[in-house]
Length: 97
Image 1 (cartoon, rainbow, N blue to C red):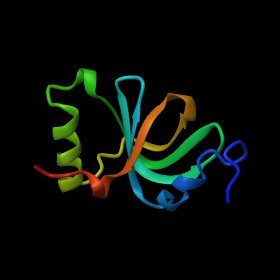
Image 2: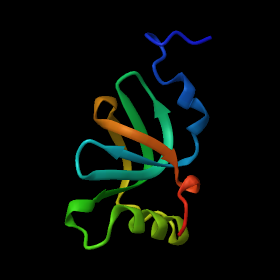
Image 3: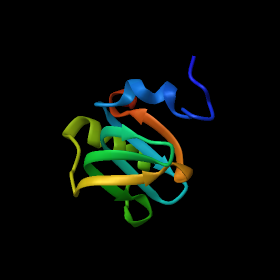
């Protein structure tokens, strides 16, 4: 059983290698392949960093479009500070409506 103090994200290890959506405390959302999780950061590759405050579409519509059309890569790699992360989920788990 993982120790929560030494492995705070042990339950997220199954997401490594998956395309994920990382919601943050800021208006930024990150969509890309989860490469690595450390105690302080989530590392993504082939990343779309999207500022939904600058968009005319809702976050949900943007994510559904991304699931359908693919990730609009604008970064090769991104490190997201763990303290900024609100949630993380598989892109494949986005429900299309």
